[in-house]
Structures are given as C-alpha cells and as structure tokens.
Amino acid sequence: MAVCSPIMLACTWIATRCETTSATSLSNPNHTTVAHVAADSENVVPKLISHAALLNHPLSERVPIKIAGNVHSKRTHKKVAFLFVGDGSTREPIQAVFPPDGVNEIQNGAYVELQGCWVQTQGRKQAYELHVDRVLHVGESDPEESPLQKKSMTVEHLRSYPHLRLRVPLYSLLARVRNQVANGAHDFYNGTSSPDDEAIFVQPPLVTSSDCEGAGEVFTMGRKPEKKTESLTLKPDVASGTEAGKLFFGTPKYLTVSSQLHLEAYSAELGDVWTLSPTFRAETSDTARHLAEFYMLEAEFRSVTDLSELTSRTQRLIQHLAKRLINHRVGAELLAYHADPKHKSDAEPSPNLEQRWNALSGPQWQTITYTDAIKELQAAHYQDRNLFTFEPTWESGLQLEHERWIVTKLGKEKPIFVTHYPKAQKPFYMLPSSLTADTNDTSCETVACFDLLFPYGTCEVVGGSLREHRLEHLISSMRQKGMLVPSNEKISGDRSPSSNSNHESNAENMMNSKPDFPFLDAGESLNTLQWYADLRRFGSSPHGGFGMGFDRLLMYLTGVNNVREIVPFPRFFGRADC
Image 1 (cartoon, rainbow, N blue to C red):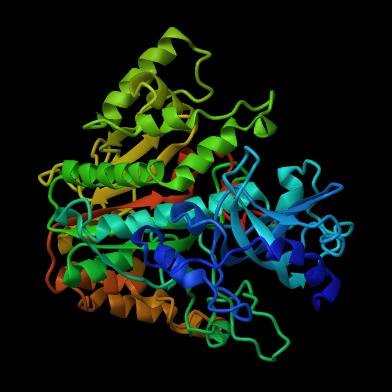
Image 2: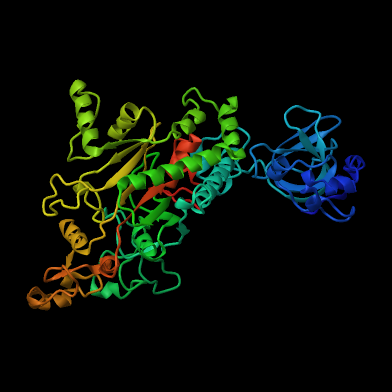
C-alpha cells in the first residue's frame, strides 16, 4: 500500500527531535554498527537493522535507523500512539512511537517498514524506543479475517495454520532456538571446543534403495506419471515386471529413514563425518514424540573401536550445544517466556529449564548395560506388580514406561546410557559385543550399541553403535535377519506371471551356480545392499557412529512437551498441511 502523505506529515513532530550524529560517535569503536545504519542525508534511507542487532550493539541515541516487522499490537492515547513491532529476531517487540493519529491506517498483523530515531525511553519495560519519522511501507492485513487473534489460541488451532503460526512469539522463539542449536553443531564439529572433535559436514541422499533400520516403516517413491496431470501414485503390483518399468527410478526407492549407511561410505574416505538431515518414517504412532518427517543429527567416526569413545563423543556434543544455548540471548528469552505469568497454566506446570539444563552437566553420565537394567526393572516389578503395564523381560525389550523408570530411579533424573542390547532387537549392521561370540547363536548375544535416555519424559534421544566392519560376519548377520533374498527375486528382476514357467528351472540353476559375491551361499543375493557390503569388501576399518533425534533434543532444551510444536511444519499420520 502506498504510504499516505498525512502520516509522513504527522510524523514530522518526531523528526525534528532527531539530531545529526556526530563524527565522534561514528568513529567510536563501541558504536561500529552506527556507520552501517546512519543516513548520509535526509533523502537516504538507513540500512535495515534488526532488533537483536540493536540489543547486541547499542547505538548512540538519536541515530536514524530503519526497522521492519509485523505489528503485534497498537495502542493510542491522546498525545501519542504506539505500535509494537516484532521483527522475528527477539522475543520482545520494538516499541515504535507515533503522533496520536499516525497509526490510524495500520492494523494489527500488518507488515511495516519504519524509519526514525532510536531514543532512550522514559518507560520501564525497555531501554529504547523508535521515534518514527517516516513510514516506508505497509503490507496490509485484515485483523478480522486473520486466523491469528490477540485472544488465546489453542495449539490445535495453530497447527492448522503452520505457515502463519511462526508469527506467534513462541513459535518464532522456537525457530531461533533451532537455529542456535544447529549453529552450535557446526561450531562443535569445526573443532572450536577441541580439535579432536573435528568432523566434515556432508549431505547424504534422501532417496535410498533400502530400509536402513529394517523395520519396514518406509515411504515408497511412486511411479512415473503417464500424463502431466497424473499424480505419482504407487500401485500395489509395483514389483511386477509390468509396473517396474513405470517406476521413476526403474526399481522401488524409498525416502530415507537414516543417513547412516551413506555416512559410512563418506567416512571410509573422509574419516569423521556428520550431517543434519531430514528423515522419514511411515509409522502411525499418534504420540507427542513421533513425526513422519523429522531431523536427525548423525555422525560416523573412522577407527573407533571402543563403545565408551562413542558415548563420550555424544556427551561432549550435547553438553556443548546446551552450554552454547545457555550463554546465548535465545536461552535467556526461553527462561523469560516460561517465567511470564501469561504462559503459565494450572493444568500444565511450566518446565524448570535451568534444572533441565543443569542435568546435562557433569563429568561423565551414568552407564548401565541393558542386562543390568532388566534385572533392576524385574526387581522393581516383583516388589510392585502394578508398577508396569508390560512385564520387563530380557527378550521383549524396553517399553517407554521402562525407559522412564530407568532415567528416574537409576539415572536420578539425569541422562543415562543403556548399552549392549540383545542382537535380536537391533539392526543387522551392529558389531557383536564380543568379537569371539558365536554368530550362529543369537539367543543371548548382545551388540556394542547404546541408547541415551533423557529425563522429564523425553527418554531416547540418541542411539549409536560400533559397526560390523568384517564382510563375512556382516553377511552372516544379514542372513540371520532374513535380509538375503533368492537371486531370482531381485527387485530389479522380472517377477511377472509370465516368468513363472521358468521359475523352477531357474531356481535349480541358481542352486548349482557359484555365488557372484564372497560368503554368499548358492542362490543368495544381497540385492539392493550389495553397495553397502562393498564398503567391507574393498577395504574396511573399524568404525562407529550415532544418530540423534534433533527435534527431541530441542523438546528437552525448550521444555515444549510436543514435538509437533518444535517443528515449524509438522508431518504426522493424517496431517501434512502446507
């Protein structure tokens, strides 16, 4: 909308109060930012400056500046009017001062660009305010039609407008926290804490040919559209010979559930590597801890032979991220948000963030083996049969209620590593706890792995392991997990009905043929995982790594109890708005 001249004329009463900045203040090293925002003349618009920059680098009073953002609210009095403008860089809006009729044409929710003088305020809420002398731009907004209202809005209502809820102070703050923690990861792996933690940032693919975890919770890519208007849908008989030719990639492909396998390929050449990447799981869990699309911080380290080295690396990373947040302005904003009485609820007490953050300190987090944890759980269960819904057994694995008990009772509300889970519960690529273990007997065998459990209901945040680097044992593990397929059932092969007549003769030939890959039995195929086995076949070293649920870590650090509020555009079962 074009700015009406009456607004500009009405603001001249404030403009006369702006003083020209002296050459002395411009040369003052404590006010270096001023040189970037001050105007050379009345006709030159100063460069845009954020509220965060104004807080970090205070300006000399009455320096002309330009700010921009959305109007959170406005207030009009007899002699003066105020706009409270949030530019997304801080929790608190900028107080912009106008003459009493200077904001008549500006509504709540509008986007504004304002020029004026940064002046020390006479009020107590903030130290400075903007005395506006020019309204440079107004992006109109109708407050009556806007889904965002000044009255209290439920999280369910806001989830219906993810493209707009970022303008709500809480979600804007959470986005800045995400930025701060992500920057902290780059900072950590650039070696700022210790050169020993340096790792190379890589970007693995999102489209894969296999299910890394083997849980079957993958999103399958669709077939090629025959017409421009046809959507990419996957027919049930996609694996048949007739439909396979219509697949976009020729054979079935999936959205990644983990970048780990590809990180191993990077690590084989580059050494220590890491990534922060989206991952996808087609699970239908409707809980506060699950999403269909989420971010994982994953790392892979070459020549790691001890599980304790992996857990130490994990702890150092998380403590670095927490410390960096605590010492940053965004951390203070989180504390202020939860301390604000407006955000307190009798139904849901405010989290004690300082207590959460302090729980991450300490020289060494506690570690307990899975077997010992089961013994403790069973002892508690025998004392109180109503303590758990699911009876803890070594074979059945840990339920969420068991993990919470472990963190609370054994971890004393601090992070705790649970290590050496049964091999039967874990993916094929994990190294046995004992290299001399009988790979043919998996009933009591464990693998060198860990889950890191956090307190306050967060539970599992990180999972990691040493990787099976020996080709023969890797293939044996895949065989035990049922991951090797008959050679005639390769996904890229023909499984159409017309091929059934030759099935028996082909099977007989395969059983008598020599495998084309080491350690395979006759008739076996690695199928889409042959490339992964190649990493062991053509030069391999001991290595290990972990994957951290980045969004779950943010849940813990921010005190937000639902991951759907942590992620700006949450995708979960039945919902993928925008």
